[in-house]
Each structure stands twice: as structure tokens, then as C-alpha cells.
Image 1: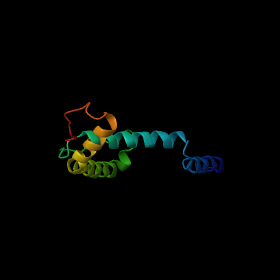
Image 2: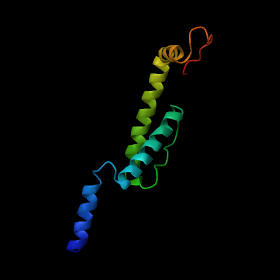
Image 3: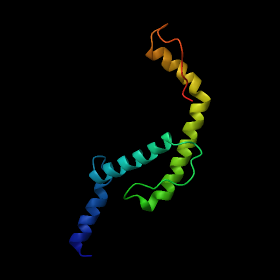
Image 4: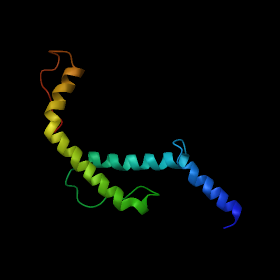
Amino acid sequence: MDRDQEAVLRGQIRDIAKTDNPVRTLLASRIQSFLRTFLGSPAGQKGPMAPPAGLASVGAELTEIGAVFGRITHHNRLVFGPFYSAILKKALFPEGECETGIDSR
């Protein structure tokens, strides 16, 4: 690698730390989308999900984080869902408008 290529590479590495960097923005978007899929999947889902394009090198770690995140949010919904449901019902509907409530389970 010559000096010019090295300088370009160093500049690209420094730029990745900036929040508006296109590569950083794209990777963050893909990671967030991947983790959101765990929120909608059943808690006991079998089989690993395929990581997003470009993230295969950290796919195992992302899948593990996503699985734990999904289990925690599922547990949170089961335990605290009735409380959240009551709070949201009061906030979204005036008194007497909504007679039946549906909890988050």
C-alpha cells in the first residue's frame, strides 16, 4: 500500500466516527432493522435469523443480542403489560369512551 492509499484509508477510518457518515448511517439502520425483527418474533423462535447484508462478520453476536433483547421485551410485556395497558388507555381515550381494554399480551 503506498502513502496516498494509506492516507485515504486513515481518513475513511477517522470519518466513520462522525454521526453523519453514510457508511455508519447505513450500518446503524441495518442493525436497528435486524434487532426490530426480534421484537415481532415469538419468544421461543427456533433457528437463527440471517444477519443483514454486510454484517456477516458480526452476525453471530447480533443474533445473540437480538435473541436476548427479544426475550427481555417479551418478559417485560408479559409482566408489565396490564400496567402499560391501563396507562395507555387513560392517556389515549377520555373517561368512559373505552369500556373494554385489551392488554399487550
